[in-house]
Image (cartoon, rainbow, N blue to C red; front, top):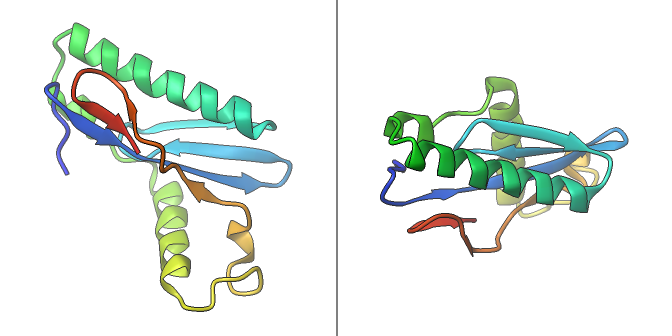
Length: 116
């Protein structure tokens, strides 16, 4: 996938770590944390919208819209996806990801941009 100022897609991955939630915008290298899941969702969404609007309104490079998250988080996301692919996804097989989620709400982000 390659995002441009004309359009694109951002994906979110949220998981609990200890007493806090960690939220990742997988396509824009945005990482946030909060003890409240709802507050985290709101701040992560706001950060993504602000970032994309800044790049578009500033006529900055499209490369800024395709930034990978840190490798440690990428490995955690990939491990979560592998757990989902298993037929027996449960707390015993993937205890680290109990309560993890990938945002599935499609919302307008900016022009032809979508949040997934």
